[in-house]
Figure 1: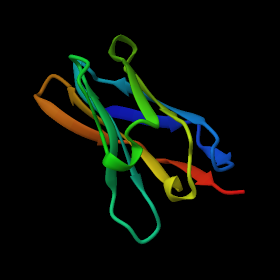
Figure 2: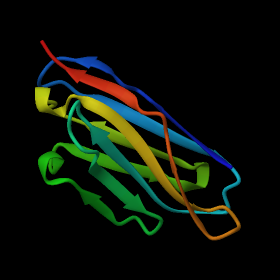
Figure 3: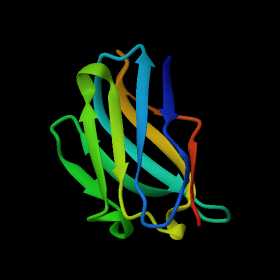
Length: 119
């Protein structure tokens, strides 16, 4: 079993910055992908950013140029640096991991961390 824990959410003013962190632990042989998704009230869960073991990154269109995803797969962590935050970035942010737990590829989600952008 793999545990995924996010941290770093909170309240920030428009134009401000926040960094989220995610740590995975448990039966992990290797990590294929770690990603951040977000879900606003009444909306679907959307990809924010993802990073592969090879370092390739992919961002949602609404965050390109403002958010940066960074990995440390040796320590099973990923971070999301968020700049120039806007009220529409308000959401619960979830960490997603795709790992080899010894039985092939498995996917796990964290419980989420709330980000509120408001003055």
